[in-house]
Length: 270
Image (tube, rainbow, N blue to C red):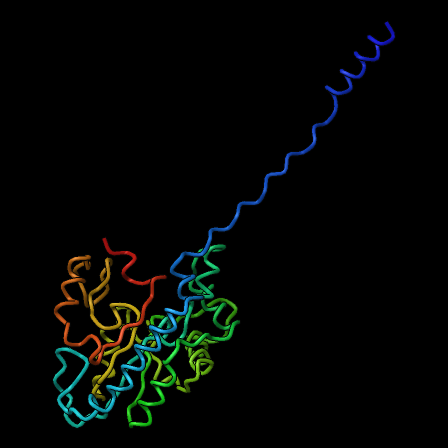
């Protein structure tokens, strides 16, 4: 009887005991995309970037001394104008792979990118600084057309703080420049993220002999699924592929494209 009594008490006490809390492990962050890892870590990416820029350096003298040559199709008013080249910034001169890795933990925002770039030293794309130096040594002026936006941020001094950060990034990548040679999106009312207007702005005063970029829109206008002025029709996969053939004579001959499997206008095309 005593044993039965003790068993009943033990059972009742167990039923009233507070169960141990169940700890749910925190969700693991998404792994960085394989394209980000390729740019960040592969020797192949470094070799391709070096190869593209080496090819461009070999072309400088030939394109410079061909007075009828321009890298801007349809632009004919070039006689007597000094030569220039135009480069994109992100993934063309400066690598953002380290920032792209952070997107496994938090979504992209313009301020987030701005804050990362101002807080971290820029990582240069191999060959870019040497090519800019070679162009300048040959008497060619260098412009940067970037879709980093000229906009104000809360608690950040200035109306266009990204321009200062971009100039600093270029300097950290081995290239000195100034605000007159860095053309930001929305720096002027018609300077949308469609880069045509800014290329034509440079062409008003210079003969543009080379274009460098990682996105199709760094060379050809109206390449986006959501068109921006002056474009009115959305680009499609077929229209973009057709333009590759249309401008076949420019690729590797005044137009130099860098690999970017991480982001760009191609990601929205169906």
